[in-house]
Length: 220
Image 1: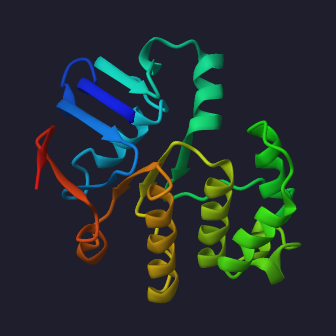
Image 2: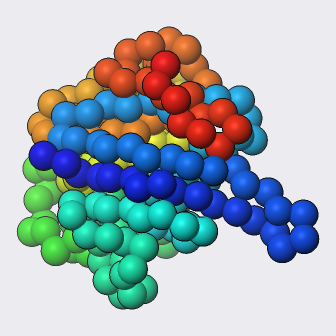
């Protein structure tokens, strides 16, 4: 099943001296795909993820998520689609500061119109080494613990597509490996993951590898 399709995506910034980090990108992402996008810093990899996730408009081209053209959606429709079908693992951690880690996960379940499943919450927090920290606020966690909490928040949504931008930052080798295992298990459930990383070890484990260079996406 096709989860995401990019059709001739282009992104240009500026009016006088134009910068075009994305010149022409077309890609089909299917259920069970684990895709890695590589390339030097500043080449536009994060920009591409933001476009796929509907967080940044294209200059031209179309993005389809689960058959829906998000480039033509109204804001409310796009917000609902992002909430229910796309998971974001970006370099900044976005947790609700006034809620404990456990409450963050329960709130996300309710926002995604899912029944409260405390067993699932416990299972995720236990696997990610956070169950003993479940009543802590985000400000009381270390950088690595916040990163793992964000991963729990993403997985609890059960999105069709996870966009991961250097998701193992702030993690030691043990937890980085565990996160990769969790993402692989996720694609084996029929979902899809697009990973951006500079880590050759993680990139080498992807099923499909692409390089973004001069605004063009090439198979590696």
